[in-house]
Amino acid sequence: MVLMIERTHLRERIRSALSRSRVVLLTGARQVGKTTLARSFVEPDSLNYFDLEDPTDLARLDAPMPALERLEGLVVIDEIQRRPDLFPVLRVLSDRQPLPARFLILGSAAPHAIRQSSESLTGRVEVIEVSGFSLDEIGADQHDRLWLRGAYPEPFLASSDRDAANWLRQYVRNLAARDLREFGLELSSATIERYLGIAAVYHGQLWNSAALARSIDIAESTSRRYTDGLSDAHLVRILRPWTTNFGKRVVKTPKVYFRDSGLLHALLGVEDRASLERHPLVGASWEGMVIEEALKDLEGRARPYFWRTSNGAEMDLLLEFPSRLVGVEVKRTDSPTATKSIRNAVEDCKLDRVLIVYPGSKRFSINDKVDAVPISLLAAELRSLA
Image 1 (spheres, rainbow, N blue to C red):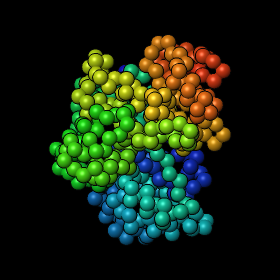
Image 2: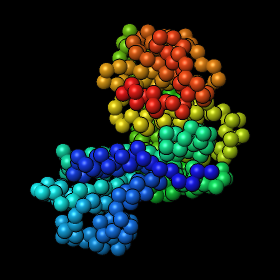
Image 3: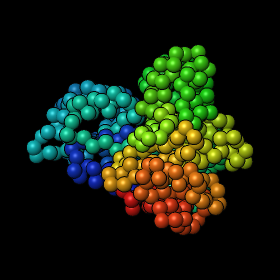
Image 4: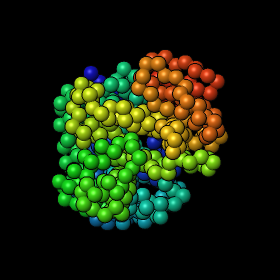
């Protein structure tokens, strides 16, 4: 049983950002651990900490300039999107010389928080996306738990799979009842839950906004806008197709993945490993989890795509690094091989490397460009290529 997860790498990223930037903005889905991380940088009950969901802290900021300008060291402001009027104040305070305070601000992925920070704090703010736990953080032996329960700290650390499933169901209800309205989903709570459940069925497939729109009787343009809202909320990842090899007839429709496998499983009604193994989307679920693990640690150092031709050749993930193009193919098998599809991708996309990620324990070379890599080694492998 895992009782405590030390998020050492993420804490170091934040610490490094604070050393060079006047303002650091942590974004990410709700309940991924942003507040816990931020609180670790200030003393308990510090007057430098403001939680904008706390009426007392809100009252302290009735006059924000006098309240903030006297503080020194690190100032943390949680749920910053609730007070967009603070961004111009932070711009003024972060321009002081000498600089008596730096600011760590947290937002639950609200688009207007990012927009406001970009407009008011241009050149002053560094943005770090916080995700749930990674396999690097929890250890390779916890792979099955991470896949089934997902990466949100609460369900991952729950005492049982049933407790984890209960937490995730409640999380979905809270999203539908309150949080997703912030991202433009203007349906009733029950309809939003139904929309999420239908969207989960399309996980890992080419996205069909028209079919999804028909299923809940909304316009296709509204369905596309809602998908963008789910992406803004860091709940789904919209993976765009790689379309630069114009000599081939390539698919140009995006694919959509739920970013957290536990959330996906809650929407699919999966509560334990046995029901997951029997589910028709078991392969797509594992593929999505691997793709998210691949992208968690890259810190914006690669642009992600997928590639598929009209005749069926495909690569699950293409990573465009500054100096190389790397393919990642996900295979839930004990004996991965370089398939015809992989060979076509290497030739057509001019790939420098291909990593076949599988659930085994040994890394081995298949040919001069293709290697089989256990999921436990994926993050380290990609760091070496970045």
